[in-house]
Image (cartoon, rainbow, N blue to C red; front, side, top):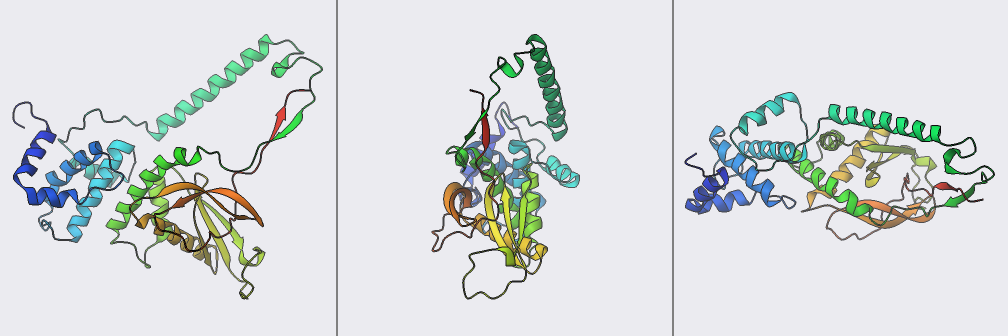
Length: 318
């Protein structure tokens, strides 16, 4: 680089001299990408185009798909802390060499997180023991003797109002991971291993899927004309957010169909977490749902699980 100019300045100057290239490369920016993330990924793409000689401006190709997939893997690692197999990590590290990201976030490894969690638990236990040692025999738990009658207080079931806003950032990250996973797989289609794609994307964002299976014969409220009672139904959630339901002859087939339905949501320009009403065990409940931008012509399938049951709390007053 000449003088003190940054990589961003050089890229901007280069694109200014090549407007056709600038217009073409900007079509690869995703809906949820911030300016900072896009500027870094754009530089990654431009720096590595020469390593993919079959990539031509304005011409789709498998080499272009691979370059774009690697660019998203790199930016997910740099900005979101996502991890991938070591061979992939080595590849993107080599391809990203020389790209300077100002004020790049620092991410803790899972080992560091687990170590810190154990330290916090130990510190909490030590504090609790110290507090109990200071209390008299009649003052344990902060209550004087004679005030041990507990009154059950029931919290309203359902997700808290702030839940969609709290969950949205994670699903924005997952949207990017799924989008580029599908690009590298050649696009969404019936012949993919839908569960494996969904599982790997969720785990790359450091979360896990939750699958619930129910035999079809145990589900009430099916349409009167439905006579088939064999098979299973699977419901998939992540972080308590409902993602999809599927039916199959066995649990594996039901899970595959539920994963396919979940991946369909990621085909639009964005995904949104919302609180919606649906049926659960014959009652209307509020549930957290992952939705696309398409209007729904029919209601949601009944829930097979409900992680927002009313909780019984103890009121310390007598």
